[in-house]
Amino acid sequence: MISQQTIDIVKSTAPVLKKNGQQITTRMYEIMFQNHPEIREQFDMSAQANGSQPARLATAVYGYAAQIDNLPALKSMVEKIAHRHVQTHVTPEQYPIVGESLLQAMKDVLGEAATEEVMAAWTEAYQALSQVFINREHEIYSDSQLCEVC
Image 1: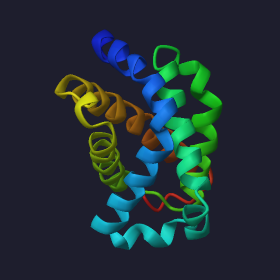
Image 2: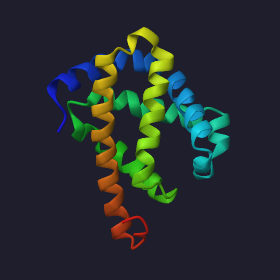
Image 3: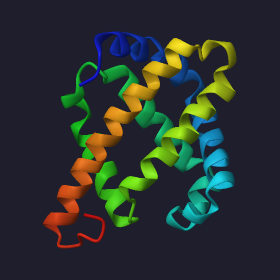
């Protein structure tokens, strides 16, 4: 599903994501809320203000980078996030918004380290992970008979 080159590049970014992750995710939310204010209502803005939401996302992004070659290790994280997404009515159409915002934030924060090769790898990696979430959330919606977005 993900090329070996992408796996290698994304894994190589794990240390910089561990160091700069919260700065990246804080910037990502700024970009996303500025460009798509309509989705703000799905977020706990107090968790934005106190930094806990960007911190949780930074941990998840770092975890994905570090374990991209061992996806079963991410199963519990995916499960927890997918259930939270269902509770907050995340739709498949919102994943490109998040991805675009995350990738722009990576460029903004990492500067020259966000090479074309790194950004291409993260684009592929994000698309693969978003599909995992979309599929799992579809199953949860279907299982709970809340299939508004199916």
